[in-house]
Amino acid sequence: MIGLLQRVSQGRVVIEGECVGEIARGLVVLIGVQRADDEARAERLLERLLGYRVFPDETGRMNLNLRDIEGGLLLVPQFTLAADTRKGTRAGFSSAADPMLGERLFGYLVSRAKQQYQTVACGVFGADMQVSLSNDGPVTFWLES
Image 1: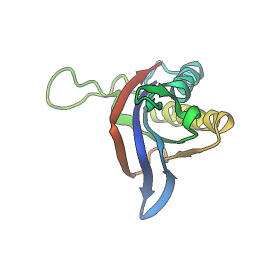
Image 2 (image 1 turned 90 degrees about the vertical axis):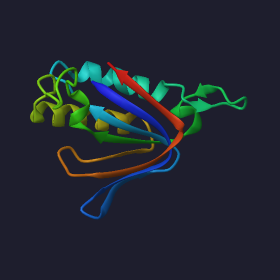
Image 3 (image 1 turned 120 degrees about the vertical axis):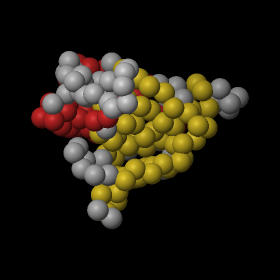
Image 4 (image 1 turned 180 degrees about the vertical axis):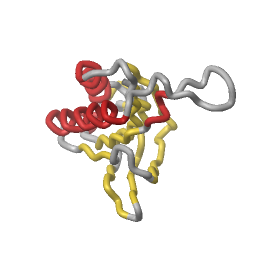
């Protein structure tokens, strides 16, 4: 499972003109699900997302995690993260999970996040979404579980 984590001052997801998820300071995480992924990998990714130290402490060093700052977590499904771009000029998606598995595991990740953390918002699997954010730093990390 892939998580493209972005430290943000704000983020939101809009579908057909309606805001379906929004956070203030925190993390916007684009989620890619691969064929070999399962619940254990989703759990490990969530553990890393909640504990990854990307926020500055009083000295300006990235020593604080999402829990420390009580920030928001916005999870957005993004099928294209699982693309194979190693050759040619068109991405291949043979390593991406099929839509049923992808939707199930994304739903599982969101459900577990809401059980473990107070401020969680999300996009909608398979929807045409407009995602906006203000990347703070910019700070962006690619995490895999």
